[in-house]
Amino acid sequence: MSIIQVAAGIYGNTVGVNGLEDKGRWWEFLDGDNSAAWFAHAPSPAVESRGFTIHQPVDTGADTRARIQVQVSELRRLLAGAEQDLIDFLHLATHWAASDSHLPGHSKRVHQALARTLSLPPGS
Image (cartoon, rainbow, N blue to C red):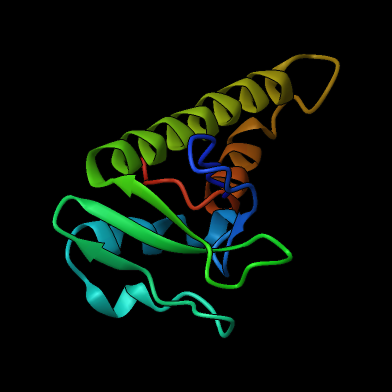
């Protein structure tokens, strides 16, 4: 996952939490689990919540003190949008697998495997 803060001129990846496997930890953090706030090992991996704003270290390749600031409500919207994109992809891939020319008879297993790999909620 990457958040780019154009107004502040910060372009880089958020430190430590960039993969699909980490999106659940973001939800846990937003829901108040402060143990989920430690995402990596360096340079400063702790995510902080100050009121309605999240402060996330970012790897810019130069300034190790750079931080992205994003409103909690905006981060929730971004995470929900990313998850919906993954669900949409899952449904397209399942439909593709079900077609006669691809993997007929295996679409349910394709769906289950992709849902598990993408860490999507049951019933997606």
